[in-house]
Image 1 (cartoon, rainbow, N blue to C red):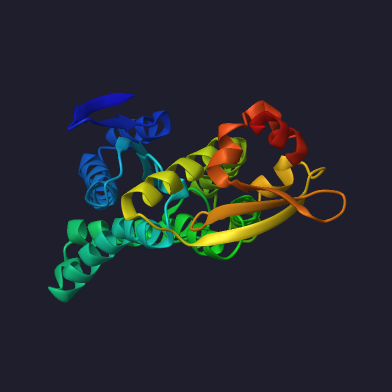
Image 2: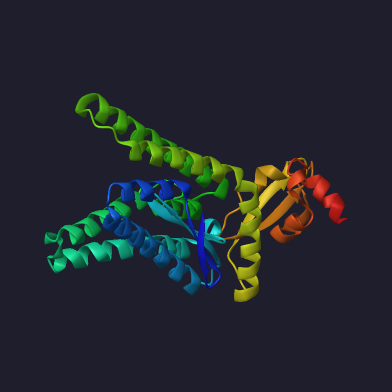
Length: 291
């Protein structure tokens, strides 16, 4: 549900968040609704402000029952510094709110204590190393710095699954031994699994986005670190694509059957002759297209 649009950024409310708000109102907890709503909104606005400062385009902010998602163009392909600054902005602001409340001993008031509890929850949850949470974005950027993008993404997806299953296990344990029903853990776990699956489906699109961002960075800076790859003419292009790095520009030496260099390709040349439907072609096919 779209609430409004401010400065080109759409503010949306997830249907589950709308349901939670309705339940709170039925229980006459409208103060709590306002606190949760504002805490999540401030958390996400922190992401947006840093992203805009770093010249990223922000499409929308969606409010969820346990947090929010700021949809920022190119964030998944961002460099390590940008990923840390943007993803870390939300938890840092939420933590600052908690520290201010405790520093001035305002937690003695029920409402201020509730504000602190909500923001502690936002910090704790969002720093979990699972996609699409802030901690997951930071860890993915760190992994991508040291391994190919596709491998780092699959590692993050597996970590997200593990965390989701641990949450489900915790909920089952609470019910069996403490007779507590923790619906929120099931909801969060389901969301993490769904989000992780969505990340995998977008991998081809994001690989192209990484290439475009590298081209923009090269044109802007005038230079870039490189990584050299050696392949055979019969090697499928997809074998190399999944190893391209986000922070380095690829130079590809193609060898013939006698292990002699028959041509040198740049990463831009490769993508210029390649479409998503052609990932199974060999480098020999690419050379013929160029020739």
